[in-house]
Image (cartoon, rainbow, N blue to C red):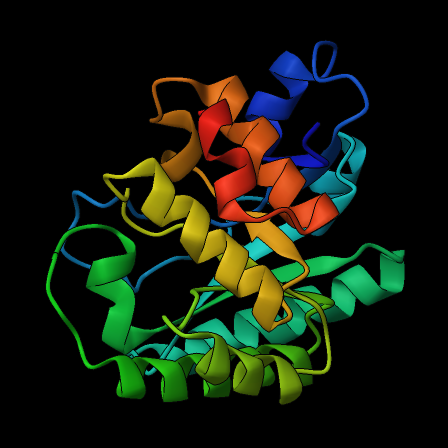
Length: 223
């Protein structure tokens, strides 16, 4: 089974009686949508304390590195990290370089410079840890070797974001498998799971890869 669910505080209050033993990763920022023109503007919508009151096991925030408002987002990270430390609550920071921001929100599908993206993911991930995050959520760089560099320079665990939906199940599972081989500790994904035809089967396949280090060939028949 899955280990956790990422959710907003309001939605957690509505479903907490039906999520069983899933850990709760509660998002406390979110002042934009993919429909807007300022993706980089993402501020707090509630507090660490409120997240605790509704039952958060982990708090998560977005931080975009390289945007014009980078200073605001880094201050947000530092302040939230301090509050989480005071309450003993782990913080996950979703560290996304500005270079891949449009790709992250599936607003722009293009072949971008993977080396540049990998270098910026490495910088952003390390920065997130240096400013207080206990877990980093970021994109896979596209190759095992470059992601190993990200892992080796980031002193906290890394989980993989999904980004835009991938068409083929096998390609998606291969991405996850490579990330785990490279040192990622898990995944934290949305549309690449819940927009699949067989959500439960996809979750089962992913769990086998993440928990059991199963090969794609061993789990592809599940989906």
